[in-house]
Length: 596
Ligand SMILES: Nc1ncnc2c1ncn2[C@@H]1O[C@H](COP(=O)(O)OP(=O)(O)OP(=O)(O)O)[C@@H](O)[C@H]1O
Image: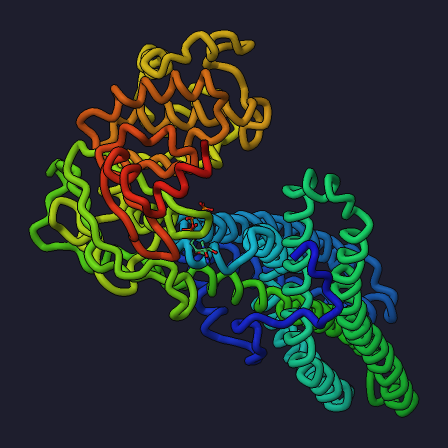
């Protein structure tokens, strides 16, 4: 993506196609409120108390003016004011505790949602990661959850509390004076027209904003992780230009979204002022005819003023809601991603306590990452327990794909991979993977200490065992020479270590779990000759009793393998020991000649 540049309009992914307000999404979100029943009941009880106070206070104003101020009854007024103060105190405390409960419930909901999302990410198929950029996935976990958080801040309680307030205010106004209530007949439909007319637009644009933001994040992610390549190839200016285009697209989306938001607010404020003016006009005429009291007009002015507050909040909520719906939809679509590699076809006689001998067979295996573009074609071979099998071949021949299938990162499209004569699809993934270990060219080191990284392979391993593994590999001295030995902090992705040192840690991590099947995919590629010889010698010993698969471009490192499979364009074209293959005038012999 970095070098492609993006003059095109950013396409919306499938799930972004607008389908309006979706109750199933809302229902699913509300499902996260299970477990908060007591807090919810308490919150809404407090809300009802607050609504009661809000509706009663203007009535007290009317009584105060008509019964005490106009006739000049100051003692009565003092009593009324005392009651009013008590009511205000109740209103303050109920609002305060209602807010506290809202945050407790809301953040609890977000926390569960984030947890479910990250749990889902742990089990998603590799095919999903092949087709989605890391930045876009990150965007879902961070930005989309943040949008839901904003919704909470806008006041999710609004939906119930403000609707209740509205109902209370309408009822109070109608009881107080039916004629003045006609003001609502003019203003309320106008408001509803405004809200529902714009909602569809807001939902659509909310979705586009979230999507373009995820594209911005994906670009940033690649820019940061690929910074060395960008600098080396002097592509900074090009990169900045590309980012400017993507950023502009986000800006354009946001720019057209927020004027709609502003339109809402302006219209709501204008409607509020119109309502106040109409009450003054109607009230003034009625007062002139002595058909209404001053207190009723005053109370009505407070009501009409209050009336538009919850309406404003509801409209604000609807604005937030449109973006939040888009975010929730994207979060749920990620959680609902179908698992292409699943544990649904488990064998009935499987028992977790059984051990594996380590016989691995591929039977007429075909595989394509996309469509029918087969990168592995009709592969068949068997590795007997304890045997070392090397896979060699030119770049792109399909060697790593064989290892991906063996680790069951993907399932074959045709044929089957068997372990101890049992189809891998019938064995639980975690159970099987806990018996194998994979060391790749990219060591995959996490931030933390060396010891913590090694324990990734065997969490309960004591310190002595970690030292022992390095000792067995013949690299104990090198590890001890690091500032704090095995307790040295390695930084993000192992940045504080040399690439060779990272690979040594990756070897130790694999060996400490004592795997039955060991897979080394270009694992020694970055080691210097002396260290590689040391590790190689150690592996000769450590391989004993384990079925080992080795992929290596440097053929010198696989001479001692029991068997070598030579791959070419997704097929096995030769098979035999080093001596047998070297004696033939085939592809292996040719590769060998090129490396001399
Ligand atoms: N995740 C993927 N999505 C789509 N195509 C892929 C993916 N991984 C590999 N391929 C393609 O599959 C083919 C085989 O790739 P593979 O990584 O198995 O080759 P390899 O023999 O291990 O190569 P190398 O020696 O360079 O590591 C290549 O054409 C590659 O482009």
